[in-house]
Length: 84
Image (cartoon, rainbow, N blue to C red; front, side, top):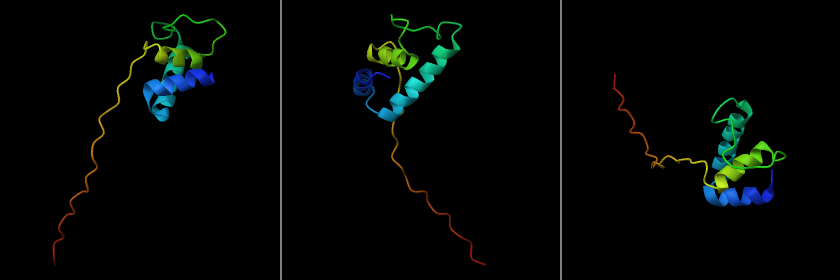
């Protein structure tokens, strides 16, 4: 993977862990081929690797993603025990 593309993609996504998941999923789609999702969404040279293609798609806003809202953790209410 190209280090410069990685830096630019992390700036777009914000979280490196999310970026890894996005790249992984997109590389699997590109490897599968066969249809609309299997083709690159950007013009790339034939020598470019699939991970670099995925990074380029992220940088050029050709691929979207949504992060779920973070919910505040709440402590569960303990159940009352019956006395015997």
